[in-house]
Each structure stands twice: as C-alpha cells, then as structure tokens.
Image 1 (tube, rainbow, N blue to C red):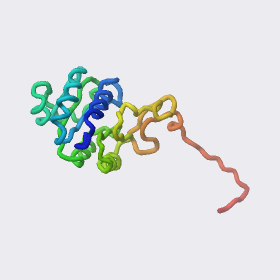
Image 2 (spheres, rainbow, N blue to C red; image 1 turned 90 degrees about the vertical axis):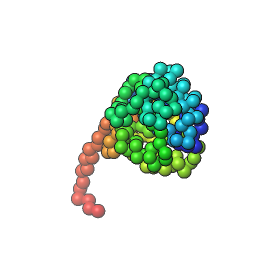
Image 3 (cartoon, rainbow, N blue to C red; image 1 turned 135 degrees about the vertical axis):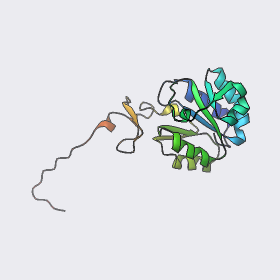
Length: 185
C-alpha cells in the first residue's frame, strides 16, 4: 500500500486477495504498508483481517501498532507461500523499499500496488518483475479463465516462452514445413 492509497479500497483488496481462497497460488502472502498510512490502515484493515481469522505475522513496527494481535514475522516468512490464512506484514518507508523487498522475496507471480498516485503506480508496474502486476485490483484475477484463455492449465513465472496464466495455446509449439522450388530472398 502506497502512502496515497485509498484505505477503503486497500482493505477490500487485501481481504479479497487473502481470504476468498487462501489455498490458491494467486492469493496474497505478504502485505507492505507505507509508514505514512500504517497506523490508520491497521486500525481498520488490520482489524478486518483479524476478524476474518487471518494470522498476521508482523515486523517490529507492525507489532508496535497491533501489539499481541500480531506474531513476529521471521525471515523465512517473507519467502513462504502459506496457502492459508497467514499473512506476512511489514511497514516500509518508500516505494523503492517495497519494490526491493518484492524483488528479493517475491515469487514473481502476482503483485499489486494500491495507490491514487499515477506516477507511483507506473513506477511499480514497470519495476516489479512479475508475471502479473496490478494497480488497484486484487491478485485473485491472475487466472487463465479471468484473462479469457479458457481453461487454465498453469501459471508461469518464467520469462519465455509463456509468462503468466497459460491456456492450451501457450502449451502449443509450432513447426513450419516449407517446400520450395528454388526460391531465394
């Protein structure tokens, strides 16, 4: 969540992306909140997550706000795909710090920024190297069916030849057979 995030939107996106189906690959596993909005977000969004049964594993600054409602986050938690109602949460000082954290610990699957600041959003969209990168939308949309590919066969975080949700077409390769009669270029 960027410092220019609409907190109501941020809460709705985080709740959806974590609790709709926590055992799937497009659920969120980490939330980073800009320091300027952290206290306000955790008063409502943190409370809502806890009411949904989400265990918050927070850094020291998160735990200073939530107290014993958050357990300490471990270094391993930043790299874990929980596939459960568990969320690693940290407070960052800048967009650059958030991007560096994502690039260091993220899966390169799906990442999202919530912000009203178009410049911050464009920076995030361009600098985060993930198969799907969202601005003000839930990561739960990372799905072949949602992208119009028909049945989803998988999601790739590779860079070639397919990246992101894959349907049958992405698993197809081509072989060209050219029969000539002496043509040259």
